[in-house]
Image (cartoon, rainbow over all chains, first blue to last red; front, side, top):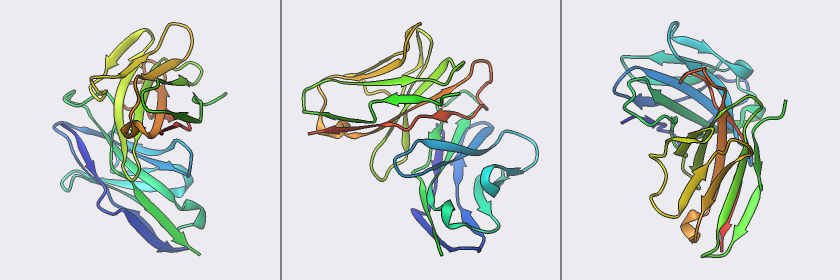
Amino acid sequence: AQSVAQPEDQVNVAEGNPLTVKCTYSVSGNPYLFWYVQYPNRGLQFLLKYITGDNLVKGSYGFEAEFNKSQTSFHLKKPSALVSDSALYFCAVRDLSGGGADGLTFGKGTHLIIQP
Amino acid sequence: NAGVMQNPRHLVRRRGQEARLRCSPMKGHSHVYWYRQLPEEGLKFMVYLQKENIIDESGMPKERFSAEFPKEGPSILRIQQVVRGDSAAYFCASSPPGTGVGSPLHFGNGTRLTVT
């Protein structure tokens, strides 16, 4: 079975500082990894994904994520946070081995709060 | 190009009534996924459908819940004899055909079901 852990319910960062939102995963085969963002009363918006290749993936709005196979992690990062980045962030995984459901498995989400 | 459309945005039902949630995927998309989001929890996969076929319903409760995606018209998630525990936000997502498991999902804004 596939699973995702987001160990922090909330991350607080001052505007202009770098931010990191943590994610670790567990799959039986090779993973497809995704980050989504959710604003209040809205659906999820796709930020970026890792399929294969370069471990550093760049996505929308200046976000990037680093795939670390040995640590089974896929942390979301941004060099300089904006107040408008405040939202709920979800990490998700899909197992390529076929052992998991066809749908994505999501973490519980991390509230990112950027303080002016 | 309209995104994934869900209606209604808000739905209030009394215990024992039926709830019908509709989802029109993005134009050209033939894959539909339904997820449920409970307060302070992540999204839980429910069902994956293609036109006229249920591909994976491993996340659907065995009773009272059903889903369809007919040849014509929107996908419908139906909850019979609703109970208070069914209160949640229900999200639909879609993806185009032939793009494989690495394709990101496009989410609607959700239907918030409240059971009184």
